[in-house]
Amino acid sequence: MQEEIVKGTSLWKDAWKRLLKNKLAVFGLIVVVLMALICFLGPIILEGLTGIAPDYVPKDSDLVKSFPPSAQHWMGTDDLGRDLFARVLQGGRISLMVGIISTIVSLIVGVSYGAIAGYFGGRIDNFMMRVVDLLYSIPYILIVIVLLNSFGGNNAPAVVKAFSDLFGGGQGMNQIFMLFFAIGFISWLTMARVVRGQILSLKNQEFVLAAKATGVSTGRIIFRHLVPNVLGPVIVYATLTIPQVMLSEAFLSFLGIGVQAPYASWGSLANEGIKNISMFPWQLIFPGVTMALTLFSLNFLGDGLRDALDPQTRKF
Image 1: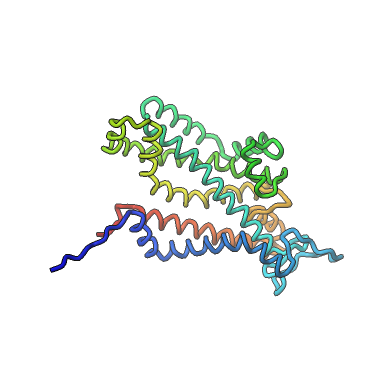
Image 2: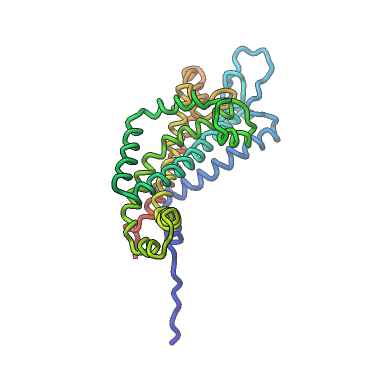
């Protein structure tokens, strides 16, 4: 009797199958992908088909230029007569970019910091974690304000200007990318703690002892052997960090210290809409609903990834 060959599976394939069984996570994934495509491609398509740009101001003599949703303007217009749908798409670009770029910054800093602290342990670990505790005690808004005032605009570091030049450059874009890096710089603290805890539980495993015995350098052990084994929790936390970072940017823009005109984000659009909520409620409703839908979807996706990558919930 011929034996049936059973193909093995990997953690990532198994996690993907488990993720697809989670309807809320799949819904979140679909919404996030569609929202990203619409925000990054929508303004180009909209301007090509209708000639409506996010910063287009109609030249007429009307005193009131904020009109409700119509066939021509799906989300209405703002105080200057600019199409709100185009503005929401433009704001989505910046809000999604701040989520992605700031999370990448927090990943690079937090994973490296936490891995080094967890691997060396002892006094080094104790000192590095007390630094994290100290930074935790400082209000993040204060840190962002100091960084923006010190390194914003033309005073931005070279790496910030390099990224800014990819999107047109200029003082306004430098300020936006400095905001991205500033939020990312304060978002790595929890990531460092998560990674440190995982490294502490792995650094005495057999594969690490074998690497030490064969003369592998400390840097290679940390970043080639240990860090890849904590990618599961890192990916989950990164997915949950993106909406947290987007909310931070929206809050800062709502206070007027985030994204500045002529650029817009969902937070700055909500800030403009709250001023006219009694007369022109659509100015707040559409940016707010769009941001809320994206944040909910990201949280659903993050929860789904957490369940999919958690070996304790695996069913045999």
